[in-house]
Amino acid sequence: MADLSAFPITQRWPAKNPDVLQLYSFPTPNGVKASIALEEVGLPYEAHTVTLSDSDVKSPEFLSLNPNNKIPAIVDPDGPGGKPLGLFESGAILTYLADKTSKLLPSDPTLRYQTISWLMFQMGGVGPMFGQLGFFHKFAGKDIQDPRPKQRYVDEAARLLNVLETRLDGRQWLMGDEYTLADIATFPWVRGVRDFYEAGDLVGLDKMTNVTAWLDRAIARPASQKGLNIPPRTP
Image: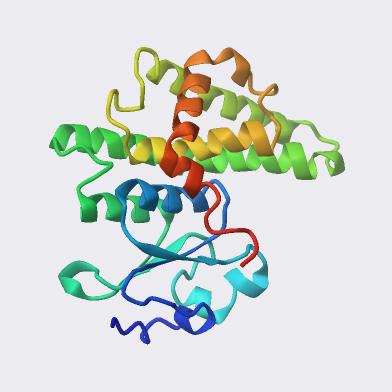
């Protein structure tokens, strides 16, 4: 049995089976990237619900694994060299899972780096900009009279979606015929804009036929259907 005692997070969220990968997350667009990827690659794992409340993500136990107090994070008891490994940041986790299983990343070096480019496009653009759009549209807009902050993120989200629309023209997935971690990283955010933030009309999503068809394909995958609801919102 693996010894995870070096990770204080396991004191607050104990592992029932310490021999499998431990996921600490919540079903947000960032959080479900990890659970969907785990379902796609078929690694056994145990999911722990870490809410977004300060009592969870700012607890000493969670901060010991992710000092940036954001989900998701993982502890893999079978990391490099057979030693336990803790990781945070969804992009790093996706890349690690792909490398560990030789899935979700093309083996060809050129295609691998191109896929990572699209992963970084999500990490640096889609995630932050869509999140700010949601904040100003669904949560803070009514309290801010100045329309410029919201409009800034509406315009930038629409621009990013148009980049995706162009990229997906004639392609099933962002890298063509191969479903990759770039798709897993990106589609939950597009889904969030449409279904959770209810901002699809604002950014013209209904007119982006390539994006909407791609989104439907991604959501329909069995791993997505399962991973989108892991971990549950209530433990």
